[in-house]
Image 1 (cartoon, helix red, strand yellow):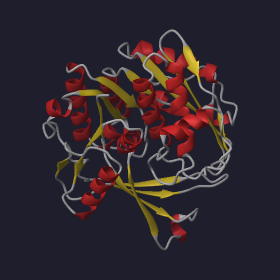
Image 2 (cartoon, rainbow, N blue to C red):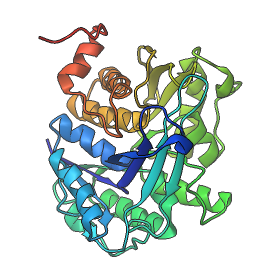
Image 3 (cartoon, one colour):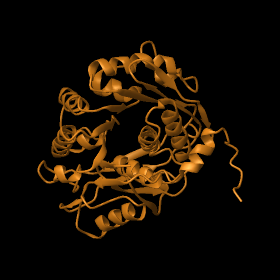
Image 4 (cartoon, one colour):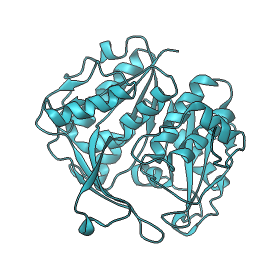
Length: 348
């Protein structure tokens, strides 16, 4: 199997212990993670050769982030150095009717100050099969957006499959107005073969929404069929896209979600089983674990979209039981859940 490359920012995550609020915290748990690094960790965990490309400060905290990638089996040869600080985000974990909360501290990070020309993309994409980026990277800064555009252009020219998770983050898009944001995301997405996003991503970035559906009022009863119109509109908007995928999260409470997904290939809409996640340990990184599972599935089962989708949904279901940003579930664990064993019995 050829290599996968992901590109984005890895951050220092600081969280109050358990379900404490920020105002109650006397100390913070430390985790390193970010959208594209999380995908890379998932793939490495499944045995897929993967490189993560980012820009890190040359200091002890940058080295800690680098060590986290290396210990998970992610390639780091194309990481570049510069800048003074690693981006940080603070996470307050919600429960029941109190949602989780994120506060970003990413301004002037090493990755936020990246510029086109800093990464040798021709070298990065040599013998690479797949490139993945997310909507978080161009949200960081104009320089990051320009570097991401540089990457997708080179990847496209070299025949690399390109995927994105649209990942709209309202708290990050500060350097441009909505019209400019749509222009940036539209150009980047136009190069993509595989497009993942939920209903908010499609609406906020492109004004595309499911017909006759208010997702905030759906509870656990999220109907897959309602998203066919989103997939069709996305393919019309981005004709290069071969598959459009949507995650379906039904939010009963912060602690109890339903979880499923759909994949549309232009002709058929595949629907996954729906899982009841009745006790969420950590939902941050759920979408990243879905994307990691999807890339693995599409590479491993190239002519079986249903199986690829089912693997992605099962993998991300398991991620909700794992503390931290990244999914550490194994292929055998995912396949066990796909096979219908959700008992959680002790493996002896």
